[in-house]
Length: 289
Image (cartoon, rainbow, N blue to C red):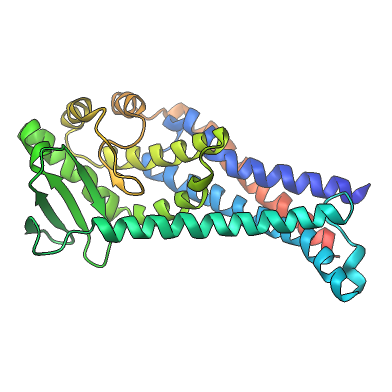
């Protein structure tokens, strides 16, 4: 009975941690934009790690049964040997999903990094603006040893000067805020985005990155009009692109002001997240005692 309670507690706690970004999205005005991205990354990352550890805790004793060790009959999750093998399969699935997602994002990043011989390269302090000749209105940032903000002539011709400045500031913010690492974390779950809850989770994570980059622009009005003009533009998968995220939510966020009265909500979410982490770790520790 006690094993059943422990396993259910850690399963619920880790899944709740993974789902926290979707909850934070609903109360986003309680966070500063950059704070929201850090909150999402910490809760998702810790949730995935602890869930994997819990599954391993269930799978290892069953696998050890092949060697006849004393731990063979100790299952973390309730059930017979089949549960252990299912847990082992879940671990393999999670690891494979992470490898596939990160590899895919890395390949896209390398493919879309523009060589010096292609387009017009304008060197800035810590990144390069690259202008490509194309009618397609595209803007994206690509992190690399040589970070780039890539724009097309089609986008440039469709925007006013102040709107174009906002687009460049937005993409530069992705680089300066090191959103490349956040995108790697998002890519861990994106291969499973055909599952509706995972799709919502990935959407919430990407939206937070775009809100943080929007907030970094110096002219919010110009950012807003640029968003309206680029709505419906195809987004480069796996990268931080100006037209990414839910455009309606982003436009609404530009018109919103931080709700200082929501500090209690923010603090409550931090408390809940910390409690879930503590519950998971303590439960796993009790299991092995």
